[in-house]
Amino acid sequence: MDELDILKQHWKKDQNFPKVNKEEIRRMLYKSSSSLVKWIFIISVIELFVGLLINFLAYKYDIFEKEENNPFEIFTNIIDVISYLVIFYFIYAFFTSYKKIKTTNNTKDLLSDILFTRKTVGNYIKFNIYMIIFSIGISTVQLVWEEDIINKSVGHNIMFFTLLCIVMFLVGWLTISLIKLYYRVIYIRLVKKLDQNYEDLVKLDQEENAINI
Image (cartoon, rainbow, N blue to C red; front, side):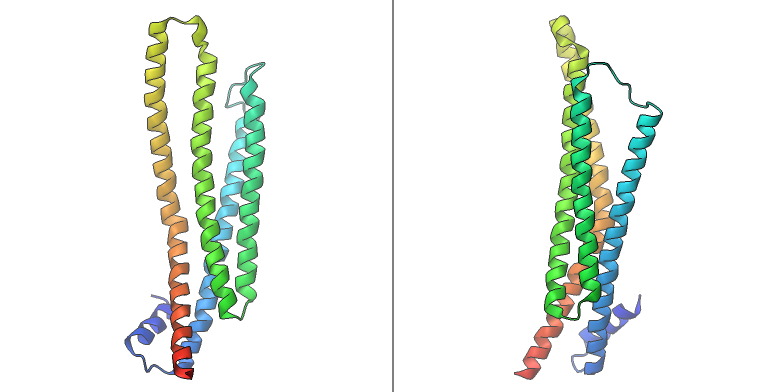
């Protein structure tokens, strides 16, 4: 248990806890919020570079076979570029939030920045999950294209589509489940701490306003 948690426990148990310690809690809540957003930014940057490294190694060592006149290759490259641009936007948004929270001395501004960061993290998670679903869909269509089903028998096509649907469903379900678990362990955990800081700051303001009335 860190110093902030100890102070918060005293504060919640004893409403007459000295005001100086409430100010100390406020200062530490500012610092804690800045640190949490900094970690969100760092983790997103690491994810970006890991993704770029994997793609670089895949193309360098020809892990994915390339076919001539494949209409999906250009399309997937365009989608990759667009997805990385969107990810760069999210990283920039996380960095901007971190800089704002780190330098602010105003509780109202801090609460606004926490809400913005929380919303941005939610959109970042949704975007990545949607991109995974989209990629699985494109891969499915590409497999159908490469199978040349027009020149195959009806029985072959029925078996092919049945197995393809089963395999892609299992792959998609497993992949999305693992990604959601990862985000729950990393991002949601950090966001929950931000939410707790938000609630504590609101409570501090409400108590101070009640005293001043």
